Amino acid sequence: MPEGDTVYRAARLLDRSLSGHLLTGTDFRVPQHATADLTGAAVVETVSRGKHLLTRIAGPGSERWTLHTHLKMEGSWRVYEPGRPWRRPAHQARVVLRTETAVAVGFSLGIVELLPADGEDDVVGHLGPDLLGPDWDEDEALRRLTEAPSRPIVEALLDQTRLAGIGNMYAAELCFVGGVHPATPVGDVSGLTRLVRRARQMLDLNKERAVQSTTGDLRERERMWVYRRDRSPCRRCGTPIAVEMRGPAGRERASYWCPSCQPAPVD
Image (cartoon, rainbow, N blue to C red; front, side, top):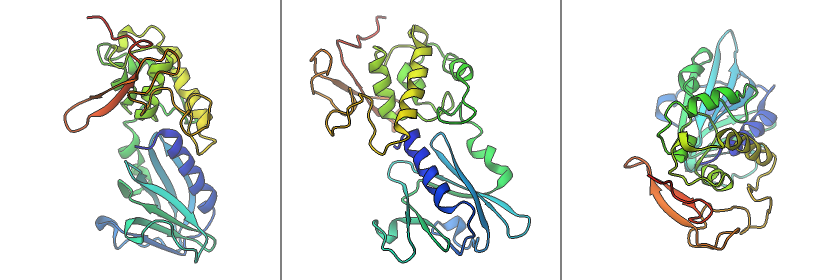
């Protein structure tokens, strides 16, 4: 699933390409909005909220809408010049927004909802502070994280109601750089504030580049400390990286860690 910085870049792409322009055509290829037509409306802006995208649209008339989309596992937004071929199959398109200068296509989107503008809180109001948002609140994020001190830290980091924007990759990398085993209870993490600040730093650095890296090295096989490096040697100590599926049944995710640099918590 895309991380918060990936969604931030998608929002910036849509905002740069569509905002201030009138829609010359729209195509919502999902059953609940198949008859919707926003031709003639103006795109106001697109913003990210954690892993959610909100495209705000005005008029014609007094109507105001928000197009709420979520990339989930395989989704993406691409913008093309009118008349240019799409680089993904047309049958994967879920939303098409056209202006005189751009065609924005949302492929394989996990969520597509066209809402009244005043309904945004219904879809993103449950989220915790956004690591890349203008209203980031470190104290509130820490308060939410510590509400359940016995919860494994990796699960707490992935919970978007605690703080918004961290996916499986950043959760694994943050635990490693913090020297914390993924199963360590939140209440036993001594450097939680430092971990949260590092999370914001990682996303902030990567939001400006398409190639994500937590090591500072942009070479293909050198970008991550532990994520998807199971059985490869730890970059610090040489111990093989461990991997284990964690989480509730049907929603398991792979956790990666170094058994030497991140010793298991003691019961």
